[in-house]
Length: 263
Length: 263
Image 1 (tube, rainbow over the protein chains, first blue to last red):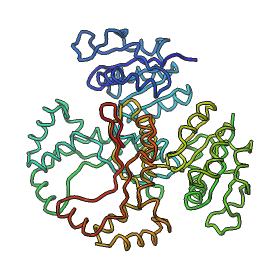
Image 2: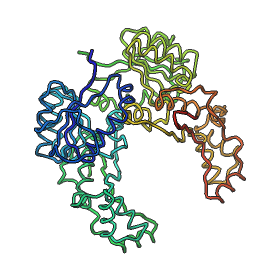
Image 3: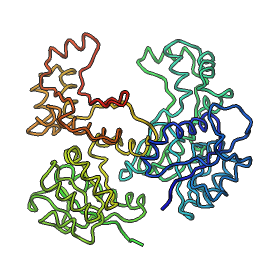
Image 4: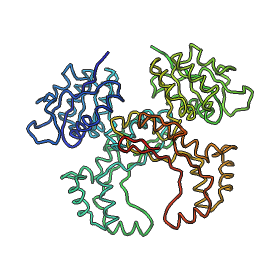
């Protein structure tokens, strides 16, 4: 019988660091719920010398992140690097091919390469988890995959981008201009320094693409999803929408109607 | 390799009939998601002669429901009889002891006998599922069990009784008296002909007891949960709460504070 379940963590940005911290802080709880101890054995990130708020000295450091997929003592590779291609994709693919469990929060990768990933999973019978890729702490992935798996889903309507939601709320509640609200979001760490990905709706479209795959068994190509961001929303729009009794939100919508799937 | 997964359904009331109907209607979808066909092979209920809106002629009929746990051709027993003791309990216990997967929506049984059930599950290594026992279609059981299993839960606050929620909403929105709202709920099929179980808060306490077990690893005894129903809520209460900017709701609350668990 296995005595512990060992993981390697790739990427130590905000999400990666928080993951390490959570595993350290709640280790007793996690171990008792999992039935066996969950142990971080190795970590990897772009720079080993960077100052971090987490203690990683007791873990092996891998300069080459791909080593994580080679190590015999690692059961699961946790990919928190991000980006649809490049090193994140190489790590996920090679880990799955080597039969490792893979856990990722990488929505861009899933939105583009799910078909390829699914093929490897089917061939290797590995486990692949990605709950954190959409709607963070809301368990939507698991709910669609297992909770309502005997239901035919006909409609998805969701707010999936926190940055846009913050900006729109700030514009509405505090009468901020789009630029002021965006800067506030950046200052609070909700928006990236290059926010285009969020405010143009690309991030939301990627997440909708993943939910679409799970709900309808068909993954729409990103370019086939009608995508409109919030860059053109003005305070005048806010004023009129309020006057008419509406709120302006960035919605991700998919409809299944008479076998026609509409994104 | 198994060619199909066979289930036996015990109890053909509202929930049981709807379950059969759903499995029939969505069989292709369910089979493709599960990977193998899910087949109902036998059903059992108090009366075989009753007129039902579902077609059950192609399934074996078991006069003695306990036969479901004996049948070699049944992988999972679905218990939809209800009631903390009696035949429902016997069926669940004997099925688990015989190594069958058990699926139940029986909150009363879980609220009273979870410790006993857990012991059998641990000994037999059987599967036991009960998502529908609390909050129906909201996947709260799965979310606590797997989705947030690496988090320490400190607070539960939930509206878990639909009957009470309907009555309180009707009193507030339509200024109905408690009795009128209750009768409306009964007419619409939301409330039982004997509604005490719901309106006295017992049903809600049972559900909170189950969530408490999952969230905190400790199941409170029902008599130790402070329980107050909605029978004494009057239209005057509604008027005052509205005037003060509040709504009256039946909440299920649990707190973990400095290692002290408070229900």
